[in-house]
Amino acid sequence: MACANDSWSEENFSCSICLDVFSSPVSTPCGHNFCRTCITKYWDEQVKYKCPVCNKLFDTRPDLQVNTLLSETVDRFGTSVRVKEQPCVEPAEVPCDICTGTQLKAVKSCLECFMSFCQTHLEPHQRVTVLKKHRLVVPMDRLEDRMCKKHDRLLELFCQNEQVCVCQFCTVTDNKSHPFVPIKEEYEVKTAQLGKIEAEVQQMIQERQNNIQEIKDKIKCSKADADREIADGVQVITALMRCIEKCQDDLNQMVKERLKSKEKQAEGLIKELEQEIEDLTNRSSEVKQLSHTKDHLHFLQAFRSLKTPPPTRDWTTVEVRPPSYVGTLRRSLDQLEETLSMEMKKLRDAELKRVQQYEVDVTLDPDTAHPRLILSEDGKQVHDGDEEKELPDNPKRFTDYIFVLTRQSFSSGRFYFEVQVKDRTRWGLGVARESIERNGEIIETPETGYWTLNYDEDGLLFNADPDVCLPVRAELQKVGVFVDYDEGLVSFYDVDARVHLYSATGCTLTEPLYPILSPCLNAVGRNSAPLIISPVSQKD
Image (cartoon, rainbow, N blue to C red; front, side, top):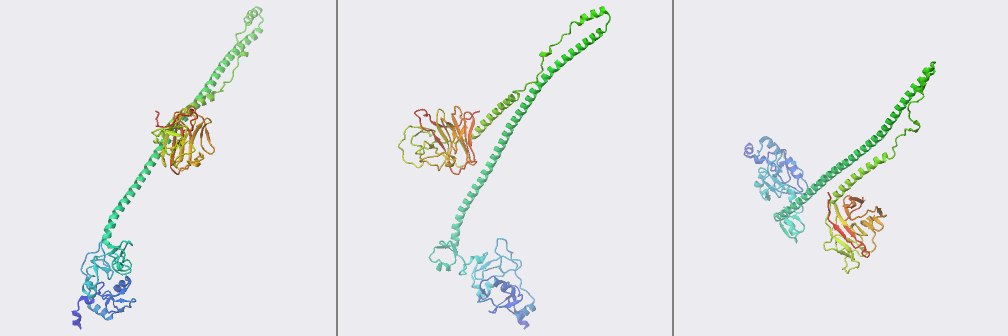
């Protein structure tokens, strides 16, 4: 018996799963032996219960029987099968599914067992006849994901109709009429597409990075504008404060000088009166002294000098009036008003220069012009031609009101343009949104999409509900129109006078805006001069 035992090799005591000496050996109904832990773990990872050696399938999970004889024999044998040293698995490599503790690198994956094996644990597949029939492939990670869930076969083909990976059995069952290509071939196609997608993604990323940079640049510009606005405001307000302080100092000095002059005059008069009182007191003493003289000769001689009184002023004509301050404060405020007016002029000039930086080049669109209007070839001038022309129908054309739009529209940012209105008795200009009515009755208000300034014999007004009447400015020759789309601001300026005329604020701007002009009717030659879109001329 001992001889028989001695002739056994280590393979007789090795588990075919872990390839190590049996630990708590158990037997399956088909008669093969395994470590209890190895076979339990193996079946825990399988959908179907089968023997790793003979591949026999069991309807239910078999009850494992302890192999007492084998257990005792292993204990007496007292040796273990030593696993040959193999390289440990690296992060990018497929690990052996059987190794416990330190996992070794898999050298093959079995499509029957759905497991990957290192060189040592692959040995049963190279030795056992049944296992030799298993299909071995290069190591594959997540092997269960590479198998067809329906046929338990390797996913090798790509269905172009369903756009899914399939196995060979799928091509003759569910997807038999569909075109198929090898997975590798489809991989190459998709890889090429991936390059295109990657390029598109990179372009989108670049566009968004550009948007971020644009936003940052705008914030930077906004900060610069804010700093400049604060600096300008501080400069003007400081100048006004200095002017007010000077005005107050001048007023104080003027009042004090007048008071001091009166005080000096009063002090002179008081001093003169005191001198007269002193002289009169001395005379009174002389009179009293003389009245006690009994020497007749001396009395008569002294009385002769007392007959002539000392020279004195006629104080009935002398009057000390308090100083008059009437008009002093007004004159000081007039000076302040003049200074304020100069500062306001500087501000208006600076404001106009600032908005003129947003000048845009616009030309009139003949497709929108009322049939009475005559446009210049360059699209910069328009006037009433006295009669309607025969023109083709165009949904963009105004048919009842003498209007014309520009070719250019604006739906963001800021823009500015100037229109010469010289020698005209009536006109209208401003901006209008794209969806305004072109036919029938038109009501020009911001609610209907018009932000326009109009001039006629009744004066200057901004069209609204109600209209806003503005002060009539003499010789208004050129009007500037500024729009800050994002802020909802539409402003009008008297360009030559550098004066702000009117601003519509809080405007709801949600669609493209077009500059709009109306030369109005010719009025028998009294309103024949054209409206002219003029280039900006910066003044120093």
